[in-house]
Length: 333
Image (cartoon, rainbow, N blue to C red; front, side):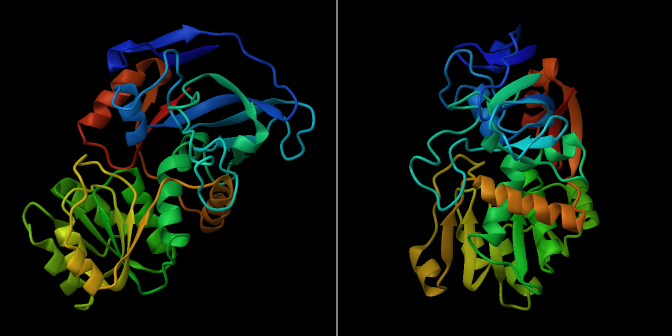
């Protein structure tokens, strides 16, 4: 089989397409033919060497495919089943613990940038019948992060206002889930083209934050002067406008740091407004199974941007860095 491995020092130029033998599954394992992957900011940090990685590490946390063979003692899956991998190999259920979040797919253990993988069956969930493999491959990191932010760390209700930032994977999934729960969405972007697309996806209001630098006040005006009930924060850095935009008792989910700047905000403003802050790192296998069921029932379709093939993985990351995409960039076989 072919797969991508990271050669050190890690960089896009040191992603190697190599041939490796396929390992048959042992007890409790599945052999899965990987049909699709998607890219995440976490993956970009790994392949760029910003996050440490071992020589020969296979990148990409997201993957979906078909079961080719099952090992002994596997009851939940059979050959031919369509499956989607999980982000955390060791987080099956319950709250996050040091042990459960210690290993991330594609960084500490091998990921899915491979034609085949052989892994324990409990590191997969069934793929929704309503989705293609490419659509399913967008879910384990970005979608599950948004899902946990809006359904586990807090609960979005009909009539709530959800504020999302940008048009990357987590933000678009947060928009889709919020609409699914009957909330209205206010989206921030700096692109007029992306603003139009976000409105098409269902955002009630879209604010260009470059044209309106004091956008916190505008968010409050657009939400009946009350402010956003929920914020899915993917940027980090200076959160002054974010806190200003929020409802009393609002929930701020810190899920990313695209700015790569330290989080800063007025403690007094947050305390006065009784803001609830949760730090979110993806979720468990149980969270993923619950999300998969909801997606299937609602017929929610992930938003795909461009498709690349596995040998062009470096080009896919270079395109990601242009920030021209809206939704998910996928790798298909």
